[in-house]
Length: 432
Ligand code: AMP
Ligand code: GLY
Image 1: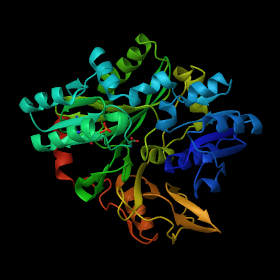
Image 2: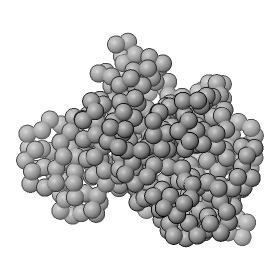
Image 3: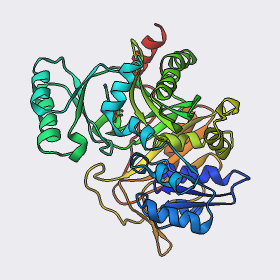
């Protein structure tokens, strides 16, 4: 089979790499791809939002299946466009992608189907939101309704920051149309956990757990980013919690989709907060997480194509998905200044084959005359596996120390379980 993967980040690199291991895949293409994807796939210089050109390419080359793991094209209806053209594509359609594309829709959906989440109110006017915060309890969280590249969520410790956030969203339109509607919700304390779940429109199968690290700097200081590292499994997500989430979150979510007439076929990302009052949903995404996917790729022990086909053929109840009995740690090497201003085009040094237990997935790189250069804020993902988290961490950090580019920075505490607050909360949670 010939497969096209839409996108050009480390998640897409990991998916291309996993697909090349399938005996049934003859060739992988990646549009637009990056300096790393070209090692395992053929890069195709078409923008992921240019559906017309993508469709023409797929028809021309005779691609059998397209996979879209990116939110923006999914929310804009890439699946509907491909299906109208009679082409096979893996991902949720536009209606199903609304679960990520509109936070108002997602929050109202959870309320309607009794799925545990932070209490919330929706606002479409600045004045009404200002009245609400004047008597609200802090901290609280203000979220722009639409996609905002991970930047539309503002945690407000007090009223001053809430006033600024509302002014930026409603009046200054800092998030464009995404900020025309706003969700204000209660702040949840706890341990975050990411679960990616396979969905075939009928069944939902949660995959193994992970823990993202969103803040730019150690100990969760600094601005939020697209993700600075991840570990899998997430030590706070015990079997007992997994059972509880299946009953109270995953199954009711699929039931809710069915009752709403939503045919969700794809990977549903469920961002959880494990609180002292049980697991609650922070958010849904309509696609596999980044960098979670990069970690899961080194743990998956089932043919990825087989799992995708089980979703597309409504056959998930017959899929036996297997995971290696290992632990994985992924550390992201970023450009100085990210998530704000940063330079690109800098030479990258030290990359080589690091052996069986390490993969370096490229996030923002490009090859120029055989020289690999930086081409984004997040540049490389060093993913290492071991028998346990400690081993995986050690190998990930030993490897990233061999790599360099001007201004490279990374967090030194990915998967550091000595974080007392995290441990205390998770233990308290487990003892309930
Ligand atoms: P989201 O884009 O909705 O995932 O939010 C980004 C990040 O903001 C999450 O990963 C959490 O760290 C944090 N966050 C969002 N909503 C809440 C909440 N209600 N309580 C605490 N933290 C939150
Ligand atoms: N890692 C979080 C996300 O993909 O949105």
